[in-house]
Structures are given as structure tokens and as C-alpha cells.
Length: 330
Ligand SMILES: Cc1ncc(C[n+]2csc(CCOP(=O)(O)OP(=O)(O)O)c2C)c(N)n1
Image 1 (tube, rainbow, N blue to C red):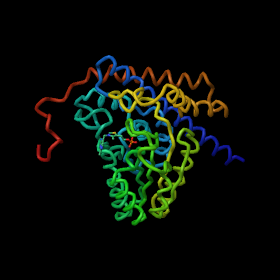
Image 2 (cartoon, rainbow, N blue to C red):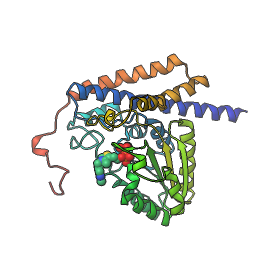
Image 3 (cartoon, helix red, strand yellow):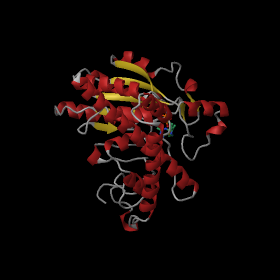
Image 4 (cartoon, rainbow, N blue to C red):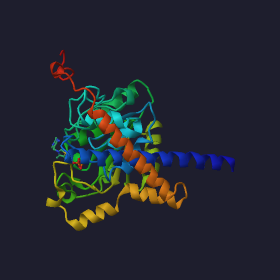
């Protein structure tokens, strides 16, 4: 009985953290949209709709594991320990930006060695073979680490998806592939991308485990990801997870999804907001009150606003450093 209570206490603590991380991602996302509208920030690749599977998957790996996320992975990075101030340094391309030292669009292409986040890239799917390579190195070194690799449904049409997943399957590598399936690649709907919309079905072709999960159901996502990580750690090879989600915002702030999605579809997407669903789930279990959940969001919103104002005042990179860390030897 005491064990059960302790276990429930630990689960509650973890789930409240998942909720807070989702609120942090939403706060940063909302703040970035405001900054873009004000002409103060260049760009947002929104993670709204993705943050449930992102926090659930990333919380399933440990600090010694590797994260190879796609460019929409803000909530992944938050779970690893990225702070709001650090993110805002990247948004304003400041010299102190720990992600790319002000060299790239926010979230576009970065690594963060301290947090074991590797080579986020704008080149769709290019990071999937890299994740297999990291997992291969970990296996050769008998490190015991697992690599979590995330990508969108569009990425699965690239040759690099096949090459990376196949290599990982052949060598039984400790890697978990998570497809954040929002059913769009910019404006291309999934029906024009693949004849079978269930990406996890492809796992059978590689001889690995494949799982489909409702990506707006945070506890279900966490469970599936924990099992996949455990499978990888036992030496049983990769898992391909297809997390079905809804993209709530346009592809990026450069895109207007009303040109290819109906109002009705957007209302439906908003209805499938993983944060609202998870908050309601926590309230139902009495692990938080509705007021408490709103307070967490309000505190995150205030922190994101302060982080933005602070970051904007930080020094810009020096012009003479423009090529530093861009080309070898400079
Ligand atoms: C190799 C390559 N082709 C095309 C692009 C342009 N592009 C950027 S994002 C994107 C859509 C990718 O969709 P998906 O993988 O489903 O991820 P999502 O953005 O929906 O999360 C495309 C085609 C690119 N960056 N790289």
C-alpha cells in the first residue's frame, strides 16, 4: 500500500512537470508570435499541438541519453533543461545564444552539447541517419544510452528516413523514432504524401516494433515511449512510434494555413489541443485544480515575457565573428 502511494506520488509529480513544460512551450510560442507581429523577432515554427508527445517522449529518456529532435521540438528541449532566457537569446540571435550563437533562425539548426541535444537541422529528415549513427556509436562504446529521434510525417517520404531506420533496425540500435504526425508537410496533406497514413505499419517492413498512439493523450504517449525506451535499453532494437496529432497553427509564421485548410478543420484542430486535454485530465484526477492549472500558465506567460525583454537587451554577436563556427578553421 505504501509502495502504491509512493508510486502514485511520483507519477503525480512527473505529470505535473509534464503539464508545466507544456505550459512553458505554449508561453514561449505565444510570446514569439507576438514578437513576430511586433517586428521584434524573425520567425516562429510553432510547436502548438505537438507539445504533448514532445514532453511525453522526452521525459521517457534520462540525462545520459541523446535527443535528436526536429525543428518544431521546442517542448523537447524544455524537458532537457533549456531555459526560457536561453531560448529567447536564440530568438533574438544574440551572442550568448547557446544553441547556435545567433547563427540560425529560432529552433532551426542547433545543437546543445550540455543537454545532449544533437544537430537539429532544417534539411528535412537529415537528422534521422545521424540519430542512428549516435545510437550506433553508443552501442559500440557500450554506453547504455538511448537516442530519441523525432520528425514529422513529411520526413518519412525522404530517403534518409528509410536509410536511418533500416540501419538502426539491422544493427538493433538503441533508438526510438517518434513521428509527430500532424498530417501536413507545410501545405501538402497526408493523403498526397503516403497511401497508408499509418506510419507505424512500416515498422514491420524493417523488422522492428511499431506503435500507433493518440499524440494528444499525454499519459498514453508517455507509456508507449517508456516501453520503447525500455525495449531499446534491453538491446531489443528500435521502435517506430506514430503519434497522431493536430497542427494548431500555420506551418510557420511565414505560412497562412487558411489558404489550404478550412475554418472547420482549424476549429477541429483547436479542439484537439493536447494541453487542454491534459489539463482537464489532471483536474479530473484532482491532481490540480482548474485555477491551479491557469495559474501555472499565467506564471509561464509572465516568465516568457520577461525572458524576451531581458534577451532583447543582451549583446549582439560581433560582425567580425560572423564566420566563427560556420566554416572549419575560422
Ligand atoms: C530536404 C528538404 N526538403 C524540403 C524542405 C522544405 N520544408 C521545410 S519543412 C517541410 C515540411 C516537413 O513536414 P513534416 O516532416 O511533416 O514536419 P512538420 O513541419 O509538419 O512538423 C518542408 C517540405 C526542407 N527543409 N528540406
